[in-house]
Length: 273
Image (cartoon, rainbow, N blue to C red; front, side):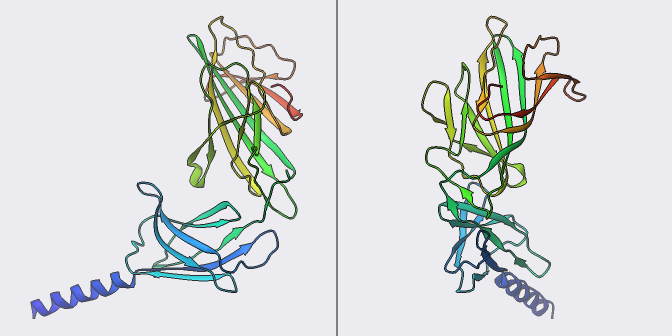
């Protein structure tokens, strides 16, 4: 009787595992409001790099259904659609029935620059020894109507940096604010650079970092970006450094960082910061 009970338990467990997880939903074109038929989707596991664990294609109504027996429904997955050269992904969360209802919205891609503004920006300068560590963060808003993703092989985010002592690095905030490193490409003219990351409708947070020369106890910051900035905050440390600027106005001391704060409003495109 005991062995029979064990065998029944094992068989039941095997049956439950074989049932696996089910992911279903649809793909919608956010530019047209229409479903997207024949769209290939990938189920990815980010652990140890993006591993593809399953694929599925939408039907004529943009719907899909993916059932896989060996899905670990307590693991983290991403569902991804590559539409017109732009990747759209969303996390997959299973319910207590090992099912996940996931819809993905994609957008038409355009090479024509849509209306883009930087709603807010933050620049952090920290002088240490003969260097100044510079970090710049930009919250870009793509307000195209109808909504479209901006793609451009010549760069979607163009910026200028003053004299640097290190190659600039860049990253975009992905899902759950995970930084996604981005290649920084040289532009036309000294100090000009660009990033080719597609700017999807809505918010994209982009970060740039580099080191500047502080060997003479002085840094001339003349960085600029190609889009207008509604508001920019400058943080400088150590707090006893002197800042001279026609753009930035003093705004006290940061409560957490202890840095001196400066602010500027309504900065024009390509205006030196």
